[in-house]
Image (cartoon, rainbow, N blue to C red; front, top):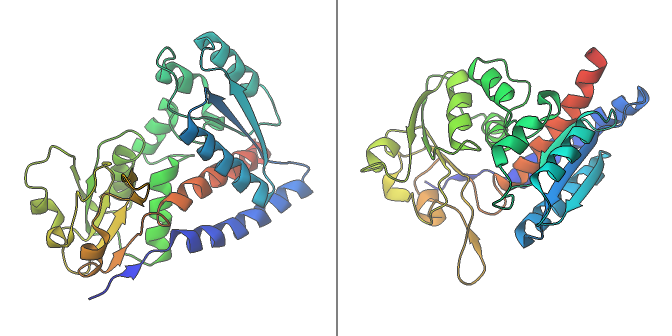
Length: 284
């Protein structure tokens, strides 16, 4: 068996075409979706991520604004900027690029963002809404995973899903979203003894730990859908995921590549949440 490659670039482009039409419809109502990104410091990776987000916004007509603050700026300066954006009617989504410098409290910063502008889906109000099945914004990466599963008609209801990872950004919300869709969910992590006991039973595996070759073909059930969220940079500069791609592809039914799998979907779901926030202003 050779697994079907789950092409995140292709799915992302199709979704962005639909999103551009939604942006056009909002413009007819004199609403132009706006996303504000706060970038603190000069972390090279963060600068690349922000640049990619701005480029994605431009491609479908979302107005983007980047507020750049010095790595030595005070926590109060970041909070003041967020309060200003909270009250700006032209800004529908606010994103703080992580990681922040050590002297700034991530939780304090994220919690000051208005829930209706929290397009990352990290505010405790939005997390609580997700737990109760009433989310208005899902965290972008697990939301992108769900879109990929749906696009490839991968059954979720009644299937056994294993999530490897327990982060607030991917692992925990991923498990909740799969559970909401009727999957039986097992949550594992890097310290789970004999991980293969779980993964060999799984119809869907989402790997999100950040460890090279955490999962290989011998640990996979034949025909399973393998979604690799991990991003690891090797010594030669190349990017790989948490899954040994070649061995997994010979056993699985579906598998995501790294890069080109989940990655493009994360930014696309950020666009989705920003547009949704703008559309919510009409209803209110």
